[in-house]
Image (cartoon, rainbow, N blue to C red; front, side, top):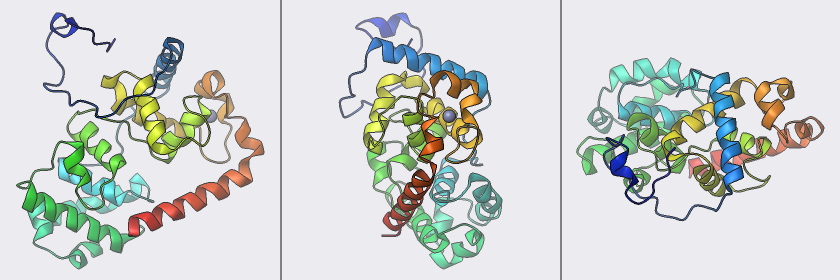
Amino acid sequence: MSKRGPGAAGARGPARVAVEPEIPFDLPRVTAGQRERAGRLLAALERAYPNARCELNYTKPHELLAATILSAQATDSGVNKATPALFARFPAPADYAAAAPGDIEPYIRTIGLFRNKAKAVHAAMREITEKFGGEVPRTMDELLTLRGVARKTANVVLGNAFGINVGVVVDTHVERLSVRLGLAEAGTPIPRIERRLMALFPRDRWCEVSHLLIFHGRYACKARGVECPSHPVCAEFGSACELRVSARPRKAAEVTGKSRARARGRAR
Ligand SMILES: [Zn+2]
C-alpha cells in the first residue's frame, strides 16, 4: 500500500503530507511474510480498537508536548485531570517562559515527579519561545534539543499534533507487546524495537500502530494478571502471551526496576 517505487508517487494522486522527511538511518530487513503477518495483526487490532487514539487531552501542539512530558511514570487520565487548569493559566509557551517552575508546580502536584516535570516543561517552553519563535518545532532533531524531550515524546508530538511519521512511539506497552506478539525478540533494546516496527508497518500507519498497541496493552494484554490469551488478537498473534503466566513474578520485578532506572534517567 505504501510502497514507493520510482515514478509511483505521481500516479497515486495528491500526497497526504507535502514533504515526508527522510529517515536518517537504515531500517532492518524484514521478509515479505513478516510484513504480511504485521499487516494482519494491524487489521485485527483495528477491529478490536476502532477508536484507538492519543488519550492525552490537548488542543495545541505545545499542550500535547507538555502533557506528554507530564505523562512519564503517570497515567494519561491523571495528566488529563491536571491539564485543564494548567493550560488555562499558561495559554502559550511564552506564558510558561515568563513564569518560574515553582509557578507551574501547584497545577501538577497530583502527578508523580512533579518538581522535575515542572522544570522540564518550563525549560522546554522557554526554549520554544526563545529559539523557535513560540512554535513547537516540527522536526525530530529540533524537538530533541528541548529539555525533557527524548525520541518517544518527539514521536508523540510529530505523529499526533502534526501528522508527521518519522518513527514509532515505543513506550512500555509497545515494548512488551512487540515481544508478546512476535514483532521483536525478547530483550531487544527500545531503539531497535522502534526500527523493527518501522520496517514492518507502512509508514502512513506508524502513529496508529502505536495507539493500537498501547490500547491493547492497556485494556487487554496487560503487564500482569489478566486472561489475555483468550483475546482474539492474543489468541492469533500472542505467541509469547502464555509465557507471562509462569514468568510473572520475575517480570513484575524487572518492570519495576526498569521504571526506577527510567525515572532516574529523567531526573538527571
Ligand atoms: Zn496477550
